[in-house]
Length: 216
Image 1: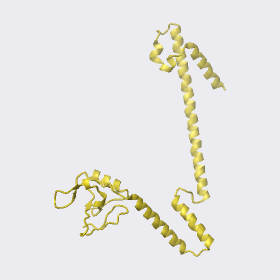
Image 2 (image 1 turned 90 degrees about the vertical axis):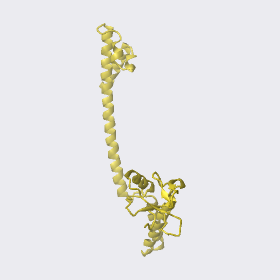
Image 3 (image 1 turned 30 degrees about the vertical axis):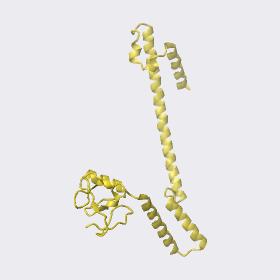
Image 4 (image 1 turned 60 degrees about the vertical axis):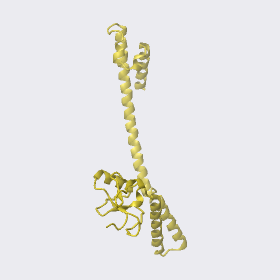
């Protein structure tokens, strides 16, 4: 017999005098996985005695043809109040923080400073706890940036070398076509459209320009 609802923030418990039904998680792996996903509880693994109450299902999810209220085979829970649960969790964390601080004998100014810093860490979990941690993170990021710059430089060098090879090959094909060694129109089948549209003189200019860049 169910005792309570497994949904986060739901305080509904079993009571035979209240018209609320409880429903087990489905045995079918796909449907069970979908229910767990919709519940949105971290590291949540439902057992054979884990239930959701009828508050989390729309009216169309129920089969009311029999004497008992049953879920349809394709029913999924879609009604949750996650905002209330998150606010409740934050309130509990702050109350616990205040309780811990009240047990430590400190002066008024130190107490105010301690509570303020703890609240910053609570509400901004991405903040660094000390300067050394921030420094280590900065050094790590600088190394990653330097590594990416080296990779980008290598890629640009490979691109320039490939461009020079294409220009040399295109210039050779155009020369062979001009000297009737190759049939006219051969370049259309060998070269990319961007290179095929250029004249031989343009290729010579490009080749000279690439040679100048290599020397510089």
